[in-house]
Image: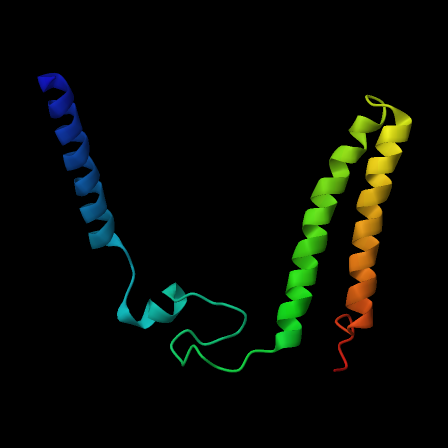
Length: 117
């Protein structure tokens, strides 16, 4: 038990020494603060965070995420083709594709896919 406490304290001391050394020899300055700030979609992080945001851009992002997840669900269907009954496989995949096509049709009817709004 004492050995474990000693080893833990030695590791903590060594890690603190390395952090102090890296802090001392680093080349960061106050002029480099802009490089350390997060960059998110062209918004200035130091300005007001409640600026108007395009709802259409948000909807396109949600559509992309939905179809991105859909691709991740379609890929496992290919290897399972030979391991299960063809009729069962076809019914499941047909039902899945129909749901996705109905979602795409709904998005198309709502003009969510047009950039000219």
